[in-house]
Length: 232
Picture (cartoon, rainbow, N blue to C red):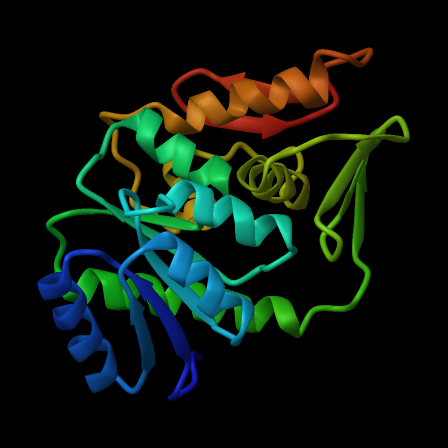
């Protein structure tokens, strides 16, 4: 479970909203450091440790996407929740590809934000208790869940963070049909919105990297049911 006193970096240029979020989180026992632009956030991040980051998408000086990319580039695994007034599928995919772990569209209920924070911190705590090396192999596909890397036929696959998470979930559940609802909940910690197709988009991304260059297909669609990792 998330511990009292988890440190959160809050990057939001709307001072009124920032103060409301800060007050609410501090009442829940979190330590919150608010900043109002991306450049200052990056400087603060470089000089301190944070257990979780909440960032707006549109920010002065450095936007939320560039901030996410910058801290992922230096190896930070701190979970990131992105806040934005934009809610299209393309916007969400762009945020996930930049390294965000979750996405909330403004306006949102504070209880929903708190629930997402608890879920992400719980997941990080569970990950830290896993063995230092855990390689899962299916057919000619191998996934290292500690290093967060994957190979097929010995060739390393160049995956984005979200592509990796999706592939890791597939390889942990081989030959079992996974519904879109299950994937949304287990991989993205989201309730599946039937009006969006972002899961199908990511499945297609994976197929181009995991299946297309190799001899046979592993990721299959089960019409009306979902997707399955299977040899044939």
